[in-house]
Length: 111
Image 1 (cartoon, rainbow, N blue to C red):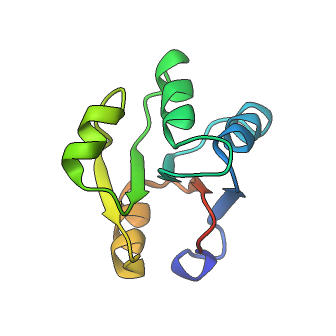
Image 2 (image 1 turned 135 degrees about the horizontal axis):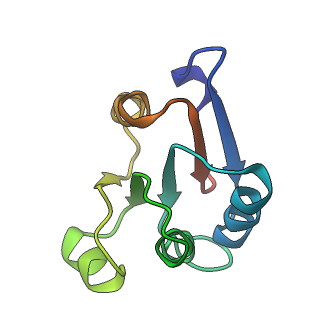
């Protein structure tokens, strides 16, 4: 992920939804979230639900191999967009550059 940013940009990585929430609580606000749907301690919905519960209005993206209809049924609200696996890092770069001012969190095992 670091290869898609400028030197002054920052990405926080977390390997699970719960760790991502703890990092957001300790690090302060981020500009966007890119989260894997399936993670060791729960799905990306843990992070999305934290953002919703705390009225944190930032772009939220889900990375997944699931189809859109499955996700629409299982997410509290639809994310801004989906990033389908296998990852297209050009697409991720486009998303990150569009939304960051520059502080993001990437949650998952890839990247």
